Amino acid sequence: MSTTETTAGTPAPAEEPGLKRVLGPKLLILFVIGDILGTGIYATTGSVAGKVGGALWLPFVIGFVVAILTAASYVELVGKYPKAAGAALYTQKAFKVPFLTFIVAFMVMCSGLSSASAAARAFSGDYLAELTGDALPPTLIAICFIVALAALNLRGVSESVKTNVILTLVELTGLLIILTIGAYAVLTGDGEPSRLGEFEASGTGYALITGVLGATALGFFAFVGFEDSVNMAEETKDPGRTFPRAIFTGVAVTGTIYVLVALVSSLLVDYKVLEGSSGPLLEVVKAGGVDFPHKLFALIALFAVTNSALINIMMASRLCYGMANERILPRGMGRVLRRRRTPVVGIIFVTLLAIGLVSTGEIEGLGDTTAFLLLCVFAVVNIAVLVLRRERVDHDHFRTPTALPVLGAITALILASPLADRPSDVYIRAGVLLAIGVALWAVNKLVLRTRGET
Image (cartoon, rainbow, N blue to C red; front, top):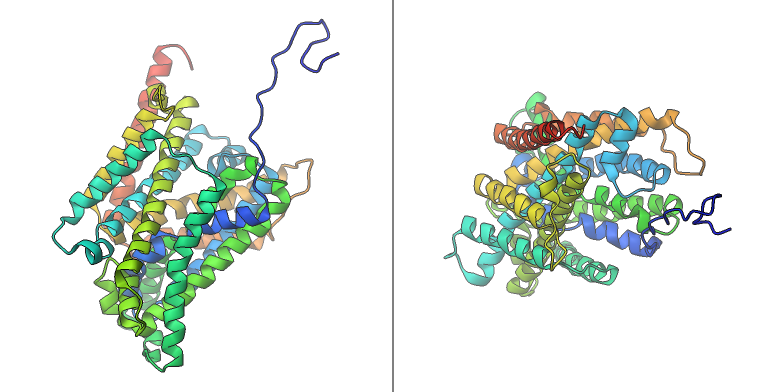
């Protein structure tokens, strides 16, 4: 008897085909690296330097440790539940509170928008000015940049693993140029090693701790992205074995590069110069004593931040579409453009939010908003790991030592707290975004109740 028939001979509905598993270990590692690399290191290095001073490398070291702690939790959960839903799935399984699940999903979506907005601000800053001069108004350029990405998103972006590899290699090339310049400077005796131990924060004790925590919270923006890779679980070969190596390797490679780039930046450029630039790595190229074309490096940097922004705008619009289809946002937000088969209402909605963000914040504030939102999500994910230990699955998977998610939750909460010395506008911006989400959720609930669908 056919497996698609019942015992009575009545055809049963055939199961929907699953996603094609095409990603092996090497391609997944490149995907993780490509997802992490981008706007964070290219745009916020100067802002981090402004908070901590010449000891620019320290926040990136701490951020690397925090990222590894949370990555371990993601690795356990994606091996245990290899589904393409990420933090929202883990939250629902652990706590079974739909409103909390919605908040986590909406925070992830908003983090993508604030990240894309930070990239737009980076695009309109010193990297672009190196190519065009200073005549263009940055806010207008940033808004036009967001609109252009929305138009590209509406047309439909055909993504492939090969494209991702190429983009990753281009972004990585820019950072390797910085490291090469740093190596040359060390070998020729250039640079100022004494800067590496200088702290901008005055005094010691509490002021120094909050200054370093504030710099770390902002620098953590450079590490976000690895959490997106779990959404590829259903397209990865043997995810239980592949993800541990891919995520840990990806975070380790990018973390090492970031610390080295921070060391080179501080070695060659005074932190006040870095702080005053929206294209801090371009300042490193100019100060490095190597005859590398400044305009070419600016072009590489623009490419890197554009790629980051496009990925985040796409992710946010698809999350919006998915939440509408799950009936936790108004159904109309899941409407698809008939000809292009792209989520038109979701794209318009996230584009309007991104324009609002671009209009109200600079790179530092927008990057800090991204980090704050994701640190809150990471705290929930680390706790979810511990809660879900009581639930067994019938296949082997990576299990992180219990101490790691405990430390991961604590460090995420500390970096998300006022101890991190972030400005109040970050909390206000995040609060307004969440208020918009809650309002949409409430309207949707009211409509469903009116129709008798709840």
